[in-house]
Length: 83
Image (cartoon, rainbow, N blue to C red; front, side, top):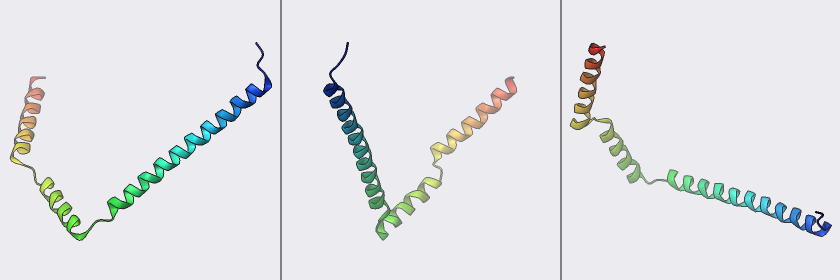
């Protein structure tokens, strides 16, 4: 089956526009992500102090976490003894 030349040319032009559109959409998305990253890095002094407080609280293990670690260490010891 042979297609007319104008139809093949129109298909090639449509494909070129499609690829250009995909490239522009990807570029726009990446540009939006960089804007969000810039907004996240610009923080006030109060926000930095709050984040530092949260990180220090996360560094201190809670009682539940301590109990889980103790259980895991004893359970691991029991498996090693059984083998």
